[in-house]
Amino acid sequence: MSYFRKHYLSQKEDKFNPLASPMVREDVTGLPPAHIITAEYDPLRDQGEAYATRLKEAGNEVTYIDYKGMVHGFISMANLVPQGAEALTEAGRALQARFNEVKAGK
Figure 1 (cartoon, one colour):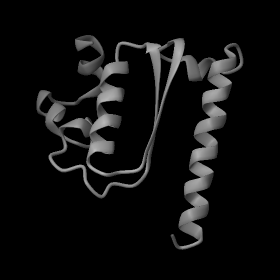
Figure 2: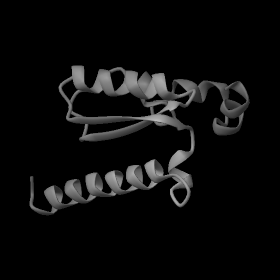
Figure 3: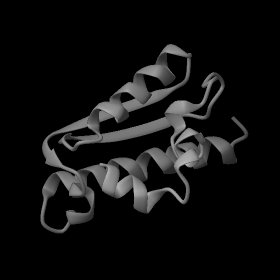
Figure 4: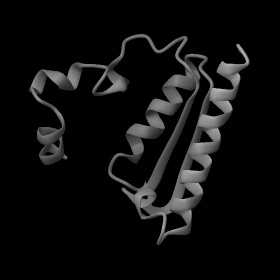
């Protein structure tokens, strides 16, 4: 993971920036609804689940889905992996529902 971190962050200090890593944010109360998708065999799965749990514990609206048997990047393989297409569709529905709520002034 350090290889990827070096390519993702401009500086080492960025790992403490909540814009790069939302889990380091001190207060997660009052955040907008979150739709978090993880893959069972993704090295980042545990972080995604922990963030979903933290958001829920802070009283935020969270949908968390862990796709069993999937690996990191499965969504980008939606044309080959049915679960990738399902995850894309689910994410699109979640976004559309939120956009409709915002549009309705909720």
